[in-house]
Length: 234
Image 1 (cartoon, one colour):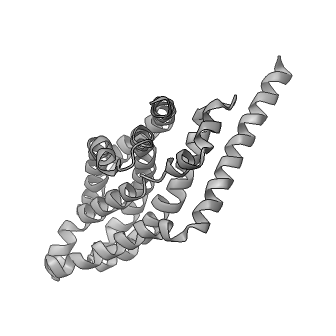
Image 2 (cartoon, one colour; image 1 turned 135 degrees about the vertical axis):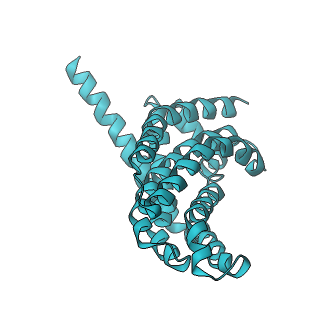
């Protein structure tokens, strides 16, 4: 039994790694789709000073919320294609009938989505903070909160993407499904950066964001796997 368990674990890890590697290669080959959210993030933040006010005092006040809202929208922009290509080419059916747990396949695909969307957004955020005159005390908390928050949003968004994968134009429905679930992450993320700028403690906000991420890692792939089965049956 021990050998069987070890063999099963090795097979599961192999499937996880193969899915991760395959989706990363596909993301690199389709660079335009990978770059679109980043370009949107950059352009939207660049236009804010032109539409609101170029004064640094005004921008510094609204910078945490603006960066977080734009990061949320940029993440949402790329969610529709999370499972769609697999659904269209028949790969999703093979995943569903595979003897390996679908949980780890979904988790691998979400990790790739975060690596090509959430992580670049986080790395870009200090530059955009400079453009919005974000005070120096906010850069570290901004990066940390975005690391936690974008990972949670990718996991939560996977559930919505799985529910709408069979719909030709499911982008609007996807937004309606996941947006309410994104709001708590947005509130605590922006609040942490704002408090850091003011010199207040942010441990409670970081703890909540960490709890959101922990729950999302455990529950979101399970929910997404179930939604994929329902969508495929439909």
